[in-house]
Image 1 (cartoon, one colour):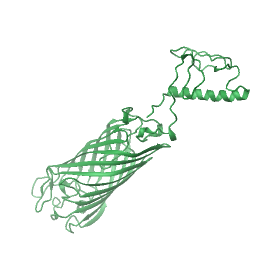
Image 2: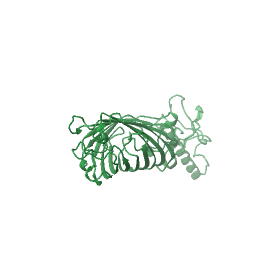
Image 3: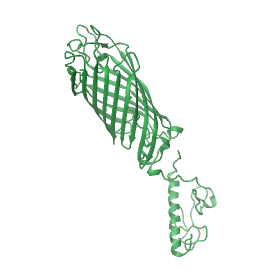
Image 4: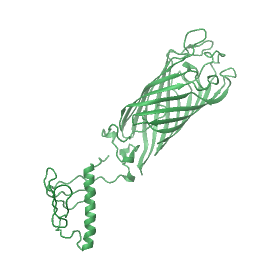
Length: 414
């Protein structure tokens, strides 16, 4: 990516171009092609410029005081792409042309903040300045984004064929812990979640968010299981915050805390019936041109877990969530201060249950050590302040939450 010229050199180039334009206009007025009145060839008449005493306007060569090392400077004619610097004779480097459409092309890295026209090139190891204009941008969806962003997001999830749906009460409640009838373990549950997510970034490093889910549950467990085969309503609300320990043009390392509140009706399987908290680290690195890697490690813990009837055992346990992701920008174009990007994304997430239970054929059995691995694949498209994601996921391990999941997501960033 071409380096941006320095502010002093850019200002000097502007002054030189303006001087040539003015000299040409006045020369045409007085009938001297290419010369101001009172000037000889190759001379430039100029009065004081705050750089030392200058000669009077229109009288011979330019008088100018010292300008640091090099002494007086007489400016000769300006050649294509460079400035002739009189006696010093040291030409400047060619001037970078104006960015197309007012934005830098970003070296194939997109223009998440091209309103200031400045971008580092992460691909060649340059740039990556702390608290500069953000170039790194959200790419995945199933792995939480580490970048604090002011946005409103709407997400649709369709999960099919839950197995051991009440494992550790992570996704669904259990009628065992609630004192109801033991559900049929071979039965399956599906859900559709429509979630509105509002996030406010207070700075480049800090944001807070709230997630408001609506849930539709479809089940073949029968009318005795969790209130009936199909129901819908408001789910468990979530709220949290992010703090970025590392925040630069190419890399983010962020701590995140999320609180799960039991606002959904557990008897209708719309919520888990307990409060829980999740904390961990999120990471994203723009390691090469068009390439990003992401990762997360999160620890979910129930706060007020129900016990299994007749025992002191808590049905819930810790659930550790972890995984990497990678993305490649298939299309990356910047123009008119609006970026257009299409990225192919692959994410792999694992969950390991510690000290939890799940419903068995007759009585609850331990879920300690159950490990679920899922693969998620999709595309993210970004156009200016709007970003879209469409993806699909399925299980890769013997243990599973669901057999497959479909996701559509739209976000409007401010």
